[in-house]
Image (cartoon, rainbow, N blue to C red):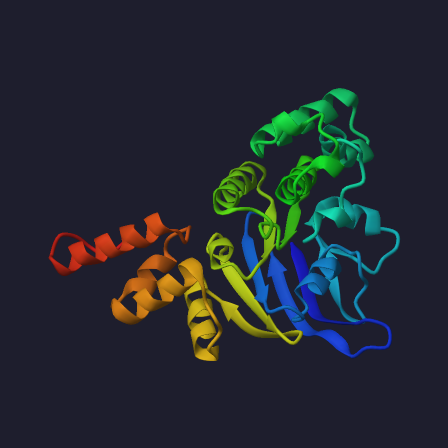
Length: 284
C-alpha cells in the first residue's frame, strides 16, 4: 500500500504548497490526481516517491516511511516516477542504454536486463529507436522512452506526472493501452497525474487538488460534475461528455461504467440509452 497521511510540504522561504493531503493506493488500483497549474500535483508526486521529505505528516510505501534514511533506496525501488519533462530524467546516450539504466542499477544480470529492455521497447512501440541517440529524439519519443524506462524496473507503484502531455492523440491512446496491459500483467498500482479527462477515465478514483488542498475525492462521474460546478473550462471529450450529460438523462452514470472516454465509448453509451428508451434492452 502507498499511503499519505495528513501530508504537508513547504519549499524554503515559502508557504505550504501541500496541506493535509491524505490518500492511499493499493496494488492493482489506479488513482488520478488532477488540479490546475500550481495546485501542488508535481510536489505531491515527488513526496510519494521519496524525492522530497514532508514537513508534516508521512508517506509510507508498504509500511516503509520515506523519512527513514535507512530504507529510502528501497522506497525508490518500489515507486517509479515519470517526470513531466523527459529532459529532466534521461541520463544515457541512446534509447537502449536509457531503458537498461534502471534494471542495471537493480543489480540484475545481463540476460535479465536485456530481456526487460526488449520487452519495454516492444510494448511501447519504440524498438526502432533502440540505437538512436536520445538527444535526436522528438519530445514525444523522449516521453515514451522515459515511461518505458520506468516500467522496465517493474516497480510496485508507478507515478505518471502528465506523461501523455507531449503525445498526439493516436500516440496517447497507444500509450494508455500499453500501460493498461502492463498494469494488468504486473499488478502494479498507478498514480496518474493529469487534467486530461481521457487519462483520468482510466482510473478507479479521482483526487482533485486546489491550492494544495483536496477539493474533491471520489468517482470520475463526480469529478466531472465538480468541474462543472466550479465553471472549470472543459475541452475535447470532456466538453462533449459534459454537454451530453446536460442533454441526455442518465448519460453520465452510464458513461462512468466505461473504462475509456473516447468517441466510440460515447457513441456506445448513447446507442445503449436509445435502445433502453425504446424497450430494446437495459442501460449498460
